[in-house]
Image (tube, rainbow, N blue to C red; front, side):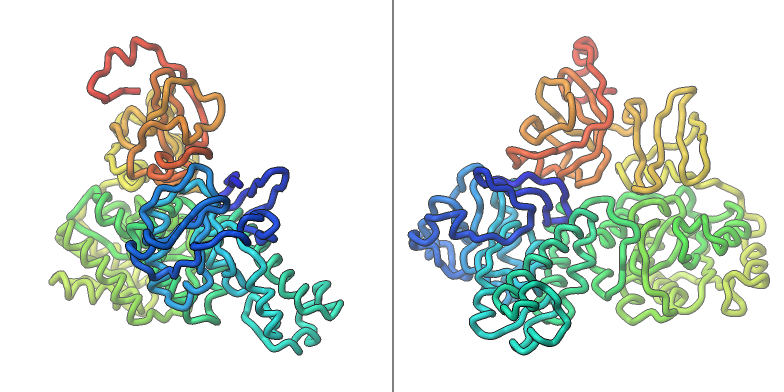
Length: 557
């Protein structure tokens, strides 16, 4: 069996499982005994997940298809094998162990193999199983529930009399067949999972499904804490809106990545005065009425920094970046203690790092509490400019305007901020001209396009000439061929380890350059034997003389 991956959403994949002449949409449940006849004849695979390496080495005897793997095993696996993690139905009883096992398995084993979790899937946990990287399931869980007279739904299990309750109208319920209902309930949930993976929204479904099971919530939270691991699988772009409807939004990898890049990559164009501003419902903020008023009062005389939950802080230059222009959060006016503490720590780190001479707080409510907590931590003085609890009132705007009297103007351009955030490289707009209406702006040098802003994705899109301004980062090295379509993983020789799914990349080979968007992280490109690594946009054949002029591996476009 192999998997043809057409969509990725973190660890989850959507596509097709191919086994001989059979094609299954994935993630899927199947009669695995029929797919893999040898399963019923094999032994020495039922090793407890918590067993150590010595026990596993002594007792686990993998072989055939699917290939049995174990979190503690160090044995190599055959290329193209389906990977089966025996006893996975026991893993959810210990959420901390579940996360340890997933990290150990995914770090070591081939990323392009189908993953099979035997006897594990139920309608209530299928979304989380898929979210943690499993592609194939069986009907053992629903069948066992039937034997125990349990009626399964995504919300959990009920007694068998729910078959006649009327809240399900599937063919199984219509026929009074509990077993048929339970199997169909799993199939329906997996069909929904596939749709959410296709739309890049599986995290939203997992957030919703896990609320009725403490162990599922624990897995969600604990995996988010493995940021170094899960961030590598997390795309740099995603759906709009990104729904931040639960407390776990503060720990989502895309939220934490944004905060870390603001602190580690971004540098404000000025460090004399910073104005802290509230967020707005409309994104990007500049298109909202409130921020039009704020910008009219500031008039480019200070660095503008938006204080918001769950992202923390958003410099004006970065308001187009995903997820800054794409998130949606319940608006209640209430900020809980965890929100205040987390966002205040981020703001304090930002203020400390850049040493602003003045910090003006045009805030109220929870955002003002965040600013006050950050100021106390840093030891700076806030200058509040909201006089009546309304940042957009005439009196508040007049005070904000007056507080900046005598300050020099300095325009902040999104090109500079996006280049720092996206490529960790400073590009100034000097010598370039822009055309188009914000946020759909294109930058040109002379008549040649250099960068476009893809406002929908929140990314800069460099042309070949634009890549010449970005140093040697975010490059994918390929073998000696001219890409005729998308670049496949077997053709990749090396890749910048910072590359994540969705990143704009430059493909470099002896015979061609290409621009495109990464479909995998760098690590997955280098470890995969199949699949699209880069979705190619444009290709340019390369003259051999150009390569000869460059030496030491540094090549100019």
